[in-house]
Every structure is written in C-alpha cells, then in structure tokens.
Amino acid sequence: MKVRVKFAKQGAMKFIGHLDIMRYFQKAIRRADIDVAYSEGFSPHMIMSFAAPLGVGVTSTAEYFDMEIQTSIPSKEAIRRLNDTMAEGMKVLSFRQIPDGKANAAMALVAAADYQVNFREGMAPGDDWKEKVQAFMEQPEILVVKKTKKNEKEVDIKPFIYDLHLDNGGIFLQLAAGSVKNTKPELVMEAFYQFCEKEFDSFSLLVHRLEVYADKGTETERKLISLENLGEDLE
Figure 1 (cartoon, one colour):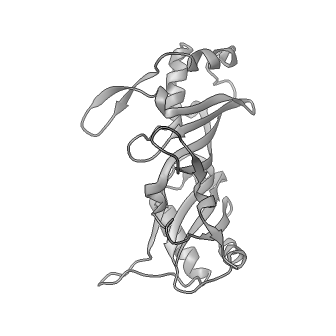
Figure 2 (tube, one colour; figure 1 turned 45 degrees about the horizontal axis):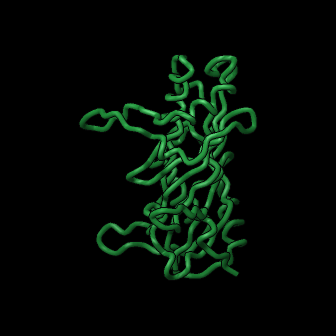
C-alpha cells in the first residue's frame, strides 16, 4: 500500500539539502523497522518520492513524501517509531494511507503552498512597508524576470499569487506551485522590495512553509486540499 508521510524541518536542519534529507529518511525508515517496499532489478531502492522539496535555508511544518510499504502498521505506531529516530529539528507529523483512486504521486499533485515570511531585524523594505502591501497587490500586473538554464524572460506573476496579506508581523503568502506555475516566495518578495524602492537581499527573509495543497477544483474554480487530507490514518 502507499502511504504519505508529513514532516517538519526546522532549526539547523533547514540547512540540509534535499538529497541529504532523502538519504536521512531512508536510514530512519530502516531504523524504525518499517516494512518498506523496494524496486526490483540489480540496484533495488526504496520506493519513495518527495513533494516539492524546499530550498536550503527554508523551514517548514508541511513537508511530504510518499512511500510504499509491504506490511500495514498503525499510523500512531509508525509516527512513534520514526520520531524515535529523528534528529533535533525533524519531526514526523502524520503517516496516512492513500486510498485507491487518490494514489497519484505527491509530487504530481502539488498545486499551491502557504508561506509565512518575516524580515530579519533591520532588513524590512522600509519603515512604512506595511502600508504598501495592499497597493502592491492592487497593481494590474507584477512583472519579474524569471531565469531558466537557457535564458531570462519577463513574467507576470500576479495570477500565481492566490493570497498576500499582513500576518504575525510579516506577510502570509499563498502561491501557485508545481512544475508549470511554480512561484517561489523569494521571487514575490523581491518584487515587493522593488515596489518599495529598496534593494533586495534574500538574507533579509525568514521563510517558513505552512502547508502544501492539491487542487481538486475545476478549470474555473480552485478547490485546494492539503496533501495530508487526501489520506486516511491506519488503525
């Protein structure tokens, strides 16, 4: 059966890259004695895939990976076993079965994500930045230069900003995600700094991912559901 694991990555663990996080969990799964399924062939590997991996330096309480297991285990027991192997800054939050019909890979499902962005002390885009948030979003378009491996192009990212408002002394963002519309919070904040006529430095930001969503709506109406809520606890 396929299960989806949700975990938090905080503290010093935010400096660990995606490939090392993947290897970390492969070891943790073995130590937790989870009966994980392996691929066939000359070089068997755990059948697992991560959804929208974070960049280095970003914390999160909504990281996901899917894996296949051969023997069912109660969710509470699996969470306990895995957390017994976790290092400081890492915590497994849920372990849920993906029912038949909803078993698309988490990576393919990702459509949006929530972020909380705060500024390091003394590095906000001016003393009056809070007064400019609404005006920033009222612009008819928000143009940024997106860089690819081959070239650069100017893109209007406003359609990909589903929500942006003041929250907890910083800014809450809900942004499009996935392979086509993927919009990073750093890109939005760079545009906001430019709007405030301030120089942008990515070190200015403290970015935390709050949730990741699939879109179960239609072409004309979004219906965002967290990846966690597409699964069911194992008893």
